[in-house]
Image (cartoon, rainbow, N blue to C red):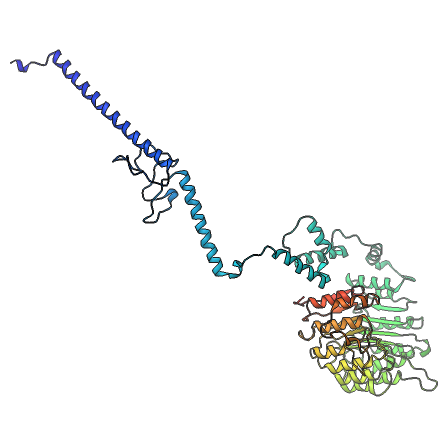
Amino acid sequence: KSKDFPPTMSNRRRTRNSGNDDLEAGAEGDLQGMRERNRVVAEREASRLARPDQPVSSNTLGHASKGKSAVMSTPFGQMFGGRSPQGIKTEPGVQEEWCGPFSVARQMIAAREEARRLREEQQAEADPENGKEIHPLDEATELALERKRRLENPSMNWVSRQQRTSHGAGDTNNVNYYAKRRRRFNQQKNLMGNGVNYVPSLFQLCVKYLVDNFEHVDTLGLVDHSIRRALCERLVAQGKMNGAAFDVLAEMGVETLELVDCAQVTQDQFCDAMRVLLPSGLRAILLKHCGRCFGSKAVQVVSEIKRDKLELFAISLAGAYLLKDEDIAKLIGAASRTLSSIDLTACPLIGTQFCQALGEHFLSSVGDEINGCLLELSLQNITLTKEALLSLGASSDALRNLKSLKLKEIEAVDDEVVSVILNSIEGGSMEGIDLSDNPQLTDESLLSIRRCNVNGNLRALQLSGLKNLTAIGLEAFFTSIDDLPSPPMLRKLDLSQCSYYEINDTVLCLAAKAASFKRSSSYYADGDEDNPNPENLVSEVSSARKGLVHVNIIGSSVSDKSMETLAATCSSSLEELDISFCVNV
């Protein structure tokens, strides 16, 4: 019955006291364990920091590990098992270092050195030249070689004004010289009249004002021929060259009638003007695109003028498709007393009678009759036969005093025609020869030109488009040879569009030397003809002040060597040089 009663107060007190004692005993045990673990961790960290290369081998807890340590000395917090710092995997069998700041730095430096070593080995295998030994004096040797090259090639010392400006401003980057040249060309084009910054001259302002109000102009008065030509060009450009403008330009008293485009002038209007101009002293007729106005009627008007009243000395007609063969022969017969220059371009109806008229009316004087003296003959794109051309040179001495000859774009012209015509010229008076675009010509024509230059008066030679010329023939043409006249001292040379490999450095060097001074047959006795040295020419040429003035060698194989020769021989005379499509320059 007593067992069923609840416990008394004393019993409850005893039970509470025993529970408190057990809690105190457990807390004291936990505190002791934590102290022991902290002590082991401190000893391990001290050992690691003292000897970081040696791992800790003693005084470790059974449950303590790098992933469960209560205290970490690294800023990364806990470590990842099986991986090195920053996610870099370690190789098998390699002792993993503790992830401290110094260890990470050592590992990064070692990895960088290893990567650089591997990269250098790969580069050495790919390009052995880069791995060659560098000598301390290599830079000095290169400077000495550069100085020697500049002494041998004086043009390397030249620096343009724009380059000097850019270098002065600190611009050392690689530049596109083609783009710079295009930009300079555009600037010059702007200054020539197409740009917004262009300031026209007073002469151009006057010409523009006259053209804009040309319908109110009745007469120009006694103005120079150059002014009339400028007005005509401006009228044609603005589409105002009509019959009324022609009447103003072709007024009485003019000595030269030059029209750049006669397409709007009728033949009747032109004939009316000729009836007034020829008796009043007209001396030159220079017409382009004159197919409409210059035909049989115009020739009839000229032939009706008395012979002693005509003073024409120059006739230049381009595009006269109405001019027949008998008409041009009649015109030459009427004006042969004073006529000395004939220039015909693209006149398709001219033929044998024209050549016969030249041979008949320009003969040397016979008895009391005085014939004309032909000094200039220019024929381009004329359909003449070979027989007609041969008769021109072989049947008479009509070309005895010729100074300028142009036979361009004529299919019948070959070596025989050139030889016959040049042999008919007496006294070596030729000053200019143009045989361009005649595909049948070969080196034999060069020999004919050389033989006709007896007095050395030849100054202009144009052989553009002659594909059959050879380098050997051209070298012989510009070389002193016994029993032949001296090489020509040219001022204008055109060898453009010839065979690429035939126009080379040797040809141009010999031409430049020949143009610079006269030479005897023994000039090359002590020198090298095939390899002339430009430095040896400077002292000999500087006193003469002579050389090439206009040079055109488009599409040739010349190189910098030719440019050095031109700089040494023609620096004081050269005005125009065209080396387009010369890829070796």
